[in-house]
Image (tube, rainbow, N blue to C red; front, side, top):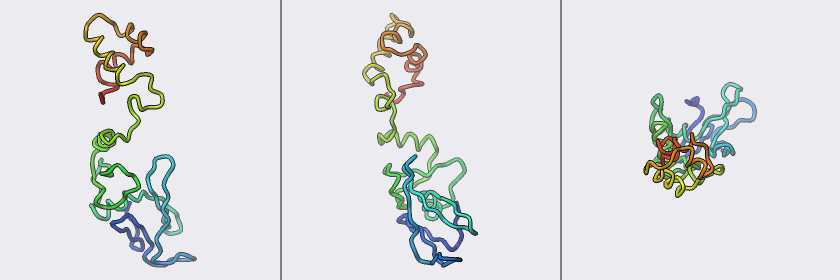
Length: 164
């Protein structure tokens, strides 16, 4: 998301219009930043030839201080805080690396933390333990734990609840 020359990005995550433009826009003033309710990322709106475009601040800072983003990589916040857009807190990583990092920091709502979870970590481990004995089918375990057998097999094969 390259900005025109008349915008500047600081290593602290501030964005400003360096030069005045047409109408009421003046140079040197920091742009207002907004945190998106949908995802928690900080954005700024910039005017480019009378068109207003919204940019993620972390992407602007990363491009300015780390370099252009390689194809297929995401910008990751090292401390997990989406509002901390200081250049030293940002790095490029794969999408999976970004997801794994978020999970390691406890930022994702997976497993029993998910609002719609029917199982606990303890029950998932019990399902795996009982299935391993060879005395239970997926259907029997599903009935016992209140989930469909398809979920039981995904738990056993670590397609679901793979974090434990």
